Length: 327
Ligand SMILES: [Zn+2]
Image 1: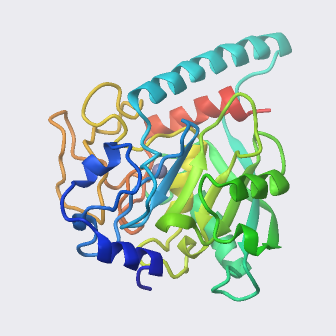
Image 2: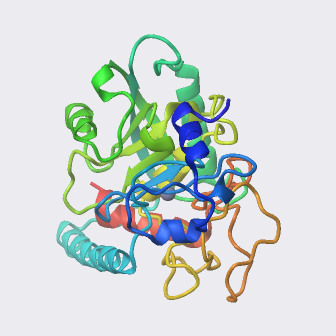
C-alpha cells in the first residue's frame, strides 16, 4: 500500500534540510521529516511521549509532534536508577518470601482490536493476523529467527473487539487514548495488553516502559496493518509488535545515547549514532567496535531486515521482568 493520506500530505510539504538525527534530537513541535526520509520508501521515526515511560515507532514521514520516544540522557539515567531501586526492592521482597527470580516467563496477552466500523478499512482485521502476530512474537523471543533466546513466550488469552469511532484512529498521548486504556486494560503487571488500530501521525506503534506502580496506560499500541500479512508495506511482518514489546520489557533503541556513554545500557549491541532505516549495508556510525546493529529488533529498519535480540538484551529484559512485572 502507499503512504497513508496524512503522510502524503506531509510528504508534499516536507522540508529538505534537517537530517533525521537532528530531527530526532530537537524538541520543537510542528516538524516535518527530512526529505531524505522520504526518498525511497517509508522510513520510521520514533515519537516520544512527554515522559520517560513510553516509546514509539513511526513510518517515514510523519507526524507533527516532537520526537518523544528518544529519551534524553537525563531520562535514561532516571530509568536506570529506578531499575536499580526496583531490583533492590524485589530482592528484599524475595528474601522475605523465600522466592527466587524467574528464569522463564509466559506472558498472557490480551489483544484489543479498536475498530471504527465493521470494515477492514475501519480496523476490522481477522483473527488470523492476530494469531500470526503471536507466532511472530514467540519466534522472535525464542531466538528462532536467528538471535539470542530470551526467557519470554507469549500466550494469547483473548481478543477483545471494540467498535468506537471516538477511539479511532488511536491518537498517541490523547485523552481518548487514556480513556480507551482506562476502559479496556485487563490483568496485572505481567499481562501484555496490545491495542490494535489505525494510528495517529503515521505511527507504527508505541509502548510504555515498565514502572514500579502499574497504571492503566501500561501496554503496547500497534498499527493493525503492521501485523503479519497486513497492508503496511515493508512493515507488515509483525516486527513492530516485536519492537514495541521490547520496550514494554524495558529495552531502549539500539541507537539510544548515540556513540557515547552507556548507549542502550546493553553491552553487546554496538553503539549507533542514529536510527538505521530500510536495510543499509555496512553501516558503521560510531568509532567503537562493531557495525551498527541494523538487524536488531530495536533499530528502525524494515521488518525484513531485523531478526534478532542479543544475549545482553535478553538479560536486560529478564532482569527488568523480575524487578517490575513478576508477580
Ligand atoms: Zn521504539
